[in-house]
Length: 150
Image (cartoon, rainbow, N blue to C red):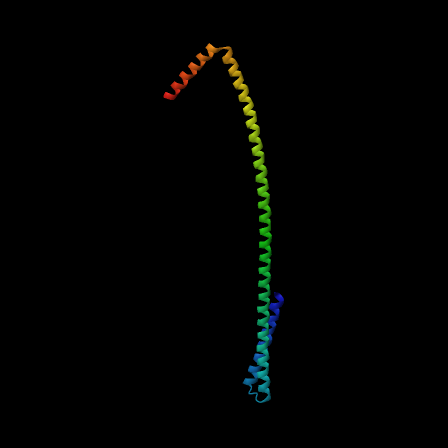
């Protein structure tokens, strides 16, 4: 970028110098061949400025293309990372779901066995003590009835 800046400044300096030279020729009354040379110098100066401006425009265009390419590459990389991370997240969620399902199954099995054992014990106790079981059932019923009214 500095190189382009230097080139454009140099072209402008040459153009300005040649314009001054033409102006000097015109103010000193240069006629004929000198006037033609002054005019030619002015044209060369204008061409130098035009070349410098064209060079700067080309450099700006190239830099803009480079910036667009860099942004496009960055966006592509970001898209790839997001897809990779989302795939990893799906895998992790799937694994977590499988673990939760396994834990729930284990908890159900454990609870089921415990309740079956409790049911067998209660059945055995009721069979062994039928009158006491009826009285306990009646007492629990009264307590639940009073608690429901309050």
